[in-house]
Image 1: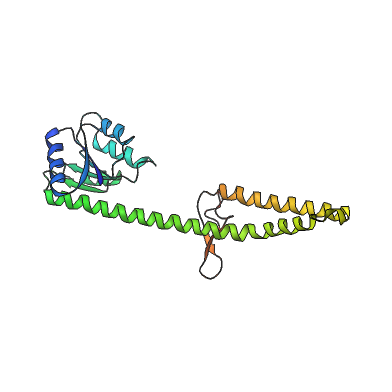
Image 2: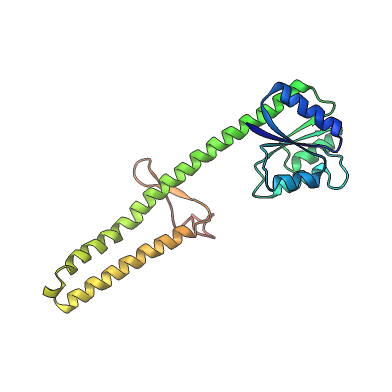
Length: 226
């Protein structure tokens, strides 16, 4: 069930919007009478969509919209401004601050419901795309680990096999095997450290159409380099 927050200092408008949504759709609805109350509620109960009035005492709708859209934790919440202000400048200001839509009061109930449902469909598509991208990143990481770690791992295993019969080996050969194991282990450690420092995933073609992460170009400060 989609969660909708209505933010309006006029309780009659808030009730009208709530009744419209409950009559026409299946929503979990929260009413807030101020911008401050809205942000406090969002901090522990995040909605999918905020229907936001502009003209409110204290923190106005523009400030609330900016606060929502400027925070990494809430920027993906859809904001639909619902206001009696109909000037183009007001609409542009709202959209520039990150609002996803702007509806002028008095609103048509069917239009309001249609806009809300449209935003929910877009949100669902965005989530599916994010899930797909995350899955692709995991697959690319798997290919990267296989490519980057297999060789040093094979070296460690090979030298470990040699050391099983260390008593029959010359001391210099034992030392060389131990040094090789240490070197390959450090190589694996360096690869893992680099992967943990990745700030932006830059991938590249490995074999055929298989994608893997370009570790060096994904490091901090390397994103724009070729």
